[in-house]
Image (cartoon, rainbow, N blue to C red; front, side):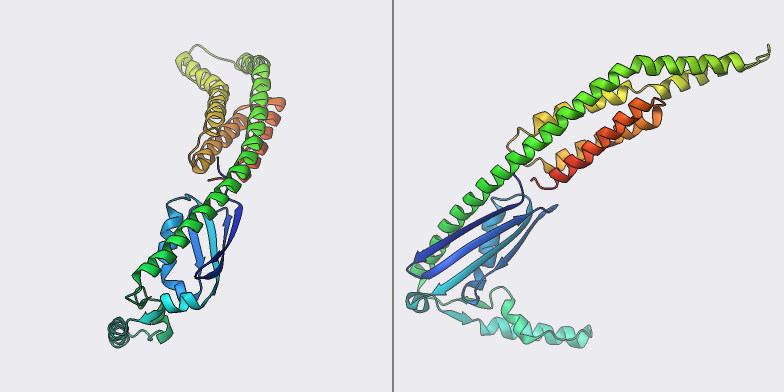
Length: 293
């Protein structure tokens, strides 16, 4: 199990200069990556994002690279603007402005278009050296981040396991009250039948159907068995090594639904209170689940 709240930092002294890589991870429903890079290497944003996506499955990530370049970098990693592409984009903007009546965006935005700013050709070996250096340190950075996520996940796993143990104990207590619950229902049903003054024309089959419906609606064993099954599945799931956050969230939604059904079916105060305790524990677990992949 991996947590989503994590942090890693790596500073490197290289031939190209000193740079520092930082990555923050926060809980999020999907994978959302925000990257901040110096202008000189802005074109590597897609390369870095793809690199991260191959290793992280879920969370809001903020990656920052601070860079103090040296003379070696300036000599071997100069940038140039693709003027032809800028002219083409400008024509597209003019056409949009004239035909769709949308204001032309600021010309500076053209520089953010993929491919407008590119590496200067001719220094391929040195550029490759820089990308290799960046890839190596990105790998180490993400390894540190994952180690942090593992520790966070282990803490969350222990918390969830503790809540599951409590739910199991509550289920056991509910089962112990079922004979008393059934006896109360039987007494109520017998009392109602005795208070009825039935004549010979009364439809006995119709009464039997009503009694069966009453008994079926008062039966909570099925819901208890489902909760026990969900708890067993959850205990097994939290031991897995793949992302389980969404699956766990669904399972605990089901536990919450079953506990609601128990509350609505039961007229036994102790069983209702125990069902409420399960709902409280489910809410607590779901808060923790929001912070795991």
